[in-house]
Length: 511
Image (cartoon, rainbow, N blue to C red; front, top):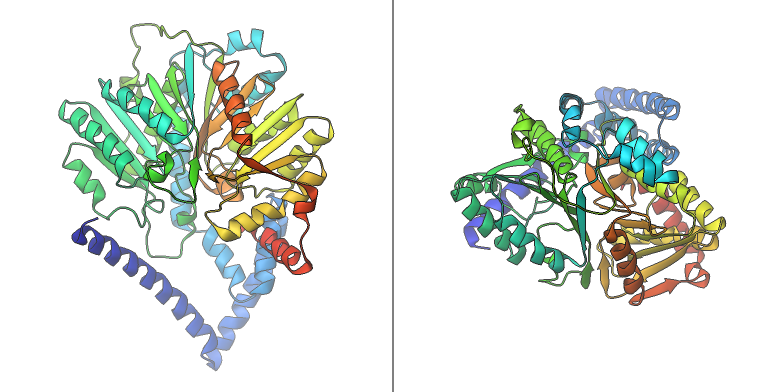
């Protein structure tokens, strides 16, 4: 990076950090300086924490989440209650939730523009149909036929197929990512985007401001606009203590003319294609969807664009087949889905739970993190106990030490119940895939951790009867050859390590 670029990035980040520290220091000063004001404030905050703890216990929420907050309040009675209220009852958070609800309500009918494959699915999917009904009737995401799916792993294989697809764009290219970083991958894509924008193709990019906090300068959207590329930040980071900053856009979406779409775990940075080494070999996965189901990802992007910009558009003008039928003849069915942390439906979690609950022979899972609540632990262990071959691959080389230690704390419960766990020895496992019984699979952005399941905007696609299901299974079995199995003896630890992991698990919902 050039020196000017670095100075701009450094000044902004340092200013934000200093403002956050100043706010925290001012509050601590008020509490500890002594005097009548301090005593009164201490008493008020202690009472507030007590009332807040009662409120948390009475809420209909995840038990692990409530336990973590109540323990935090008991541990820090002065700050705990105030911290909780700051995270849950702020205007900016409610404003964002309102924008999300408005966008989803106004555009719900647009998903069915190509027509759904529900009637055909009823004839073919049998016991898998409840999963389809849940996503289509409750969550609002239709199932489609006439869609082909190609599965790619690792990320460099996806890039090889993605670049030609981008070059064929005629009308628009929409991109939505958690991380964008300058380097070989992004530069390769950006050169095509510049060319397409110059040809009159509409190019839009959404990236998460926290995800790129130390990667891109503050004025990067303006730089892209000079090339004719429209760009907005999701939830721009502000130097204020606010819960709104906790909800990030973790999705990875590319839509090309509404005909071809991408999703998966691969961000636009060089470690995702192993152009640079970060935590060893980076094992990731993604899919390219071509046909009717690609339209669903277009709507997801346009909804997020509306949320970020406040601009309302007629989404139908982007529909690619207003006067012709889709001629793609893919096998099976595809059901894209998205998840928002600001509603009452934990769509990503429910997709995973239903796969586990309906499994008869096997479920193979790739995930970078394994930090889950009791319902997911119960689903995993119950499936194993009723004879389902449940296998999970996690990383051996970690990216966050505390997260990895917490992940390993779950091993002993799962392994003792018959779940088979493996660690990817070559490096970092970042793929988020489930495959089950040679019939159903999902590829997406949702990790098996609290933040991804409950706090982030996520997306994915359920695949039924597609050849990609077999490809995902084969890739999992091939990956096992470079993994070390976790045996029951490996889960034993001394008292202090065990205690430390238990403490980490207690705070896992807040990580």
